[in-house]
Amino acid sequence: MRLSGITAESLVDGPGLRYVIFTQGCHHHCPECHNKESWGDEGGREFSVKQIVSMIKKQKKNPDDKKIQGITFSGGEPFLQAAELAQVALAAHQIGWDVVAYSGYTFEEITELARNDDVIFAFINECDILIDGKYIHEKRNMGLTFCGSSNQRVIDMDKTRKKNKITLWKNV
Image (cartoon, rainbow, N blue to C red):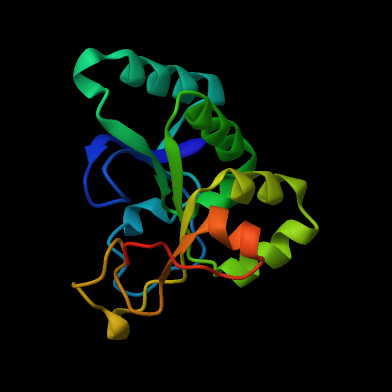
C-alpha cells in the first residue's frame, strides 16, 4: 500500500489517542484540502500490510503507549486502498483497538460501491466510525468534532449496521 504518512499519536483524528495512517492517492481534490500532498498516486512511500501490522503491534506492546485507543485511516482516500486497509483494520481489532476511517465518499456512495466490491465491503465492515463526505470550505466549521465542514458526518457504524439506518456517533 502507498502511504503519505503515519502519526503515532493524535488527539484530533477520532476519539481518544489514535495511531493515524494517511493514505496516498485521492481523486476528490477538495478545494482547500489540508492534505493536498496526498492526492497523487505516486507520492508517499510503499508499505506492506505485514509492515504496518508489525508497527501497530509494536506500538501496542510499548508500555508507554498502551493508552492508544485505536487506529484512524485518513487520506488521501482510504477506500482506494480498501483491500490492504481491511487487513490492517482486522489486525487493529485483534489487538483491541477501534477503527476510524475518513472518506470523501458519503456513506451512501460507499454502500453502493460495496454492493459490487467485496474488498470495499470488507473494509467498511471493519470500521467502527466513519467520517464521511468531502471537505467543503464554504461549510467550514471549526467547532465540529472530527470534521472540517458541516456536510460531513461522524457515523457510528456498529449502530448503523444494527439499525440498518445511519446513526451518528453519540458524542457529536
